[in-house]
Length: 631
Ligand code: GAL
Image 1 (cartoon, rainbow, N blue to C red):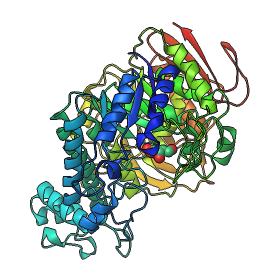
Image 2: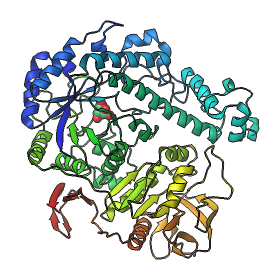
Image 3: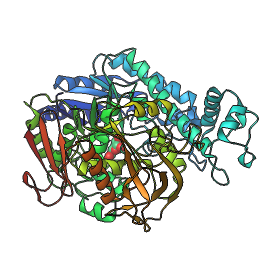
Image 4: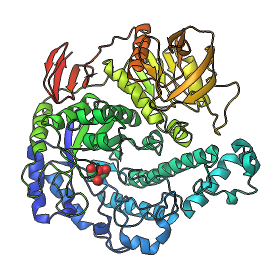
């Protein structure tokens, strides 16, 4: 794999006279990729059927002539205003039934047939016209960003009813599967079934989970329609730019239709608005970003892209959209770029080329200031460009440890969290953090993995519904499997199975009772650490390797299977990971706070995410720095 750099550019934002100079400066900087076009629909088609494609043709030529390869985005995240006159009901409705109005972006419902036709049409038009001159494609922009997967529109309701009919066949089967006799919720016909919003108290979790699955399927279908249009006219690889901690659709399912997964990495914005860290942690890493959140997504999207992935948008300085928007410490833009490369990114593209002095993102930095003078990130991008220029190709080895991530489990936890602070994403991230504190490479694995034998250890926390295929693959592997809390807690229709969970073949353990805990009521473990948030009382004849101070079992191992029935705090998690690594001959390094290691086949990177110098076993690491050693 070769490492490359790029940027995101909006030719339609600038006078045509400066395109040539911009392209020259990009190439001089050492960039090779430019992504364009993803919000330009109103300029490509100012009124219905009035196609104005020549300017985009010229822009692509200017960039290609400077030696830059173009990623062209389909413009469907920003349907123009005229389309709302044609289809007033194409906008999504929120959970309160209110329309999500025009005036920003992503104002469409995935289920609206008219909009779906418009999306296919504009995709076909640009694929036909530009298919031979672009080097890669991006479908739409950030599915799900701004909470836009789930729509409670009429179009969604009708499509949901069809989806249910295809899945259950008869309304009697649906009533039985969902347990609709509870509270007399039985239906006579599919067309009586509404969406699970605006109910007096909570809707049936089976209903809510089915709607989540349907909503995800709509994203997959929408994306596939664009892919089919593009493939008819272009052989260039197709990607989509996913977001950080947007889990409302199954990215693995979308990714199956694409050659490359990309994502948009905004470390400082994310630490402010979605990581879910304590105020102390936010303060300590305010100008560096969380040490694990980006890496987690790098590993996740490497799995979604089946090895091929990019950062399509890299934060280059302060952003405009988080509660607070600090500047990164000097060195962080280089560190973030190298961290992506160390996890296998083929390309890192900075968002954006020039800061826009108008509209919503005026306060979002770019590589250039609005006056075209270089912004601080430019120096660090130039440094990376020279570092990767003549570097040999690298490959990414299989890690010792695999960690399963399942979007369906994330929806199940959201539908029935049982405790206000509990989320599947948070649980998996806590496991990932512990593995990284132990200095380990981690592979994130999709739930349809057939064979886990390449791994010494597989962690499977929180898989509320364990489909038969996954259950079998986990039972059959020679890897050590550590199942986590809520494993197999519900069947496919959100019913509690009997025999009671986790019902793991060969492991004598039953969850006899469970509880959620207030954040200020942890249960201490004997020997250090605690259970936080969620606790399962386990019935087991197996001796526990972690138990509560009062002697209740928390984590057990028998042969190469373990069950950990609770959510552990940092110390408890570290003890659990250390025990499992020792059992499986996996070498760990206890790393100082904020320091992380990542290995490729030939390199070992040490990243210091701290704002101060840190002493490590390879010597002192400067603040916000990367040290690369050959192996
Ligand atoms: C991303 C988006 C970009 C831009 C950027 C600002 O979510 O894809 O278009 O809005 O955020 O940080």
